[in-house]
Length: 301
Length: 264
Image 1 (cartoon, rainbow over the protein chains, first blue to last red):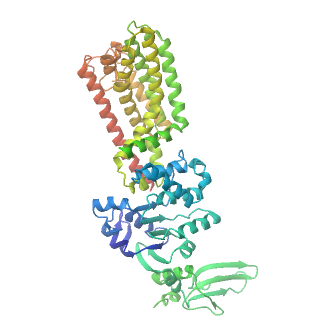
Image 2 (cartoon, one colour; image 1 turned 180 degrees about the horizontal axis):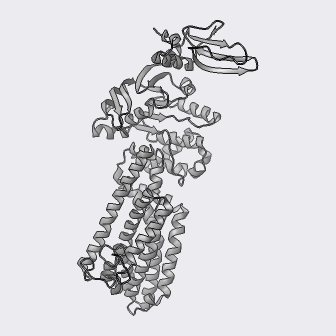
């Protein structure tokens, strides 16, 4: 396994438990990490990159045990990381910034660094703007530079934290295409709360909720969590609300009334069964975990 | 070593491209040059090396302060730079070359025009007087007074820049700088660092080694902190300036770290 955690726990000063006994085994390819805000995704990624120390538990990344100084140092030679927010140096051009990161990643040979910079710039499609200062780059272009810097040194493990947040639809599509190709020959852990990104790029997914690992399997298996429980239901009249107790995934309101996409074990009268999506599977998983309502406690029992 | 040089190069490049560096340093450097060439307190010395020593006092008064003011927001910007600190922490290059490069790059960039103008003045005086002593005096001044003082004022201003709004930090730096360099005890109703071995004006090495007029050392004051000028007291003055710079840098980095964690 490329990434392994055993009973991984992180308790921040003040007592907030961000991770609670997470056992995770990840092999190669692109793996999505899903979870609501505050679920512990960023804390997990920061521990996996060696930025943060866990309170307890064991972490092994690319064969390096991160509880030792030698393991942490060795990890840094095999790791690419794109943090959730990244303020690039505005006074450098994209080419200079990537070269600078190459220096920090100990690519000492200048020609090799230049070759990698050229390759990375082409990979993220920034050839036309490579010699412009980063201060003038759009959010999407900055994220592309962010990915390019993470790929400097050709890392075997790539950790990417919410890379598409704040991007316009076109940039997001472009970025997803870029991400989809990165899993070839390396392990990519992609943290996001945008389910579409996972659906389009990750064959495998893990879900965190309140610091616990709730699910880790094929993405299709997460979709199947909602198989047989997903319905479309039309509310009677324009003011009709959602059916009580059901997990509402989406709603469309027209002049005629509202149509709800719901996940429930007890469908209301008139509900039409449909094929589930990743969103439905995610909603079903969280509902089953919460077990808050009678109509969803039956899910997966 | 190679990594350090490249880090230094990129940090210097970023500083070169920031207008505030030139806006704060160049006018003060030109003012120093103008005063050095026209002010009788400098030009009136018969000994050309002493003329350079006096000019170095002016440079250390204006230009060094300008360097500090230009770099006041350096630590603050670094602490507010989202994601970069943790990204840098995941790279195999250790914190020591990163810190050294990010410190020396902007400092040397800001000091470059100051050094160039002082050396230009020294060359002119040397040629006119037919003596190499002014050039030697300028070089000694740069190494033993201007560089340590610039390190201290940059570290101090950087620390204040983390603790206070940048404009307030710059104003406070000017006040403290004047108190520590140009507030002689004969005029001061309160205790002052001016003329002591703690003063960042570096009067002791300037007088002892760069032929600056005697008045710039103790500044007519007395006491244990204003000893007689000599090699030992000059060395002590330099050592204390460097020690204070190290303390201010450490405090500044600690404050920046606390600020970054608080923001996270």
